[in-house]
Amino acid sequence: MEQDFQFIKETRKEKPVNRRKLLFRVLETLILAVLFGVIACLVFVLLRPRLEEAFGLNQQPQQVVFEEEQPPVVDIPQESEKPEEENEKEEPETVIINKTQAMDLNEYQVLLNKLYSIGRKADNFIVAVTGVSNDTDLFNTTYESKGVGSGVIVAELEENLLVLTERKILRGASSIEVTFADDATVAGELLKYDGNTGLAIVQIKLADIPKDTRKHIEIAKLGSSVGTPVGQMVLAVGSPLGTIHSILAGNITSNKNSISTIDRNYTVFTTDMVGSSDGSGAIINLDGEIIGFVLQDYNLQKSQTTLTAVSISELKRVIELLSNNKDIPYLGMKISTVTDEIAEEYHIPMGVYVREVAVDSPAMKAGLQSGDVITMIDDTEIIIAEDYENHIMNLVPEQEVKITYERQGGENYIPLECNATVGILTKE
Picture 1 (cartoon, one colour):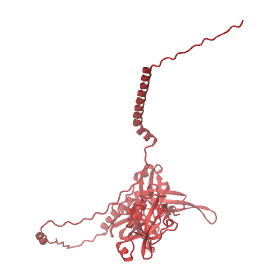
Picture 2 (tube, helix red, strand yellow; picture 1 turned 90 degrees about the horizontal axis):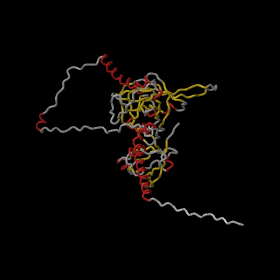
Picture 3 (cartoon, helix red, strand yellow; picture 1 turned 180 degrees about the vertical axis):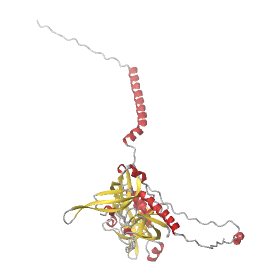
Picture 4 (cartoon, helix red, strand yellow; picture 1 turned 90 degrees about the vertical axis):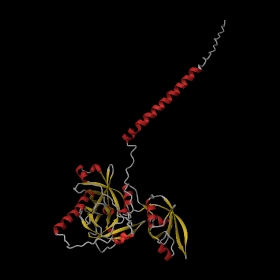
């Protein structure tokens, strides 16, 4: 007999949701989340400075900045407040010199000693820079050749010491040596150089400099050369005679000379100090401040060996950029200001006259030519050469600029525009 089996069918009833308890748990979770967030935020805020300091995350690259030049102060004599009658009665005081006294040799020697002591103190920021090159002679024998010149310590950063020197000393060098006043020698590295002036910055690791040497190192103070008068007594330090740590004393003989270089004009001081044609170094005043950098390549009289120096006030921006590991912006024009007299006499529009355009320069590629008159760069009006120079120095390589200029077409000048890409001038 067959039996029929039937499974029992069951129905499960869901337990009812406790809404009150669920709401309580949700609120509890939210409160804990907010509390956790507040605690995490407080901990982050309190620990962040220490963490950044520990891992060096908050350290910004140290920048070299020189003091801005201040225009010379001109003292205007005030008129006397006394009545005119009293002024008429006053007579200039008469000075009678009964006897002149000549300086004897001992007194003269004391004066020279004081003068040269200023130069000897400058040795603390003067170094010898040597570029070492490996060459081969006719017999295929390898030998070392060295180019030696002087350098000036211009800045000290957290890890490096920066030395200003000339690029020609280091040209082709496989290694660089820097020697301090106590004959301690350490390795240097070329940081940046300016293909226009030939100035270069060499950096030295502070950790490589002996502790005794570091005690005597000083940073040169770049003074103001604005308004330097003819006849001012100065000293040449560095290697003006071709020998490191040599010193010369003399006077400024001219402050009106100017030399036109690519994108910038420089004031050149001439002196009555006779030095080496390969001399290098700096010109300092009686306060020990540098007012000029010796660049014999800018000597206006090649037949003479009197020392010449470029105004330090006009070099500061270049030195600052190089010291901060930045390239010098380059368009590639020699320029001069169109003065009111020139504009009226030759019927040239006011602006900056382009005297020469360098071959393959950004300016030539943009279509600029000799004889053009630049009146605006981007939104900056260009009236004098200093306007052009200051604007160019604030640009960066690869930046595109719009140049507004005028070009002579027949009897009139035609306004034109072009775009130029800022470059870098390199010379080997």
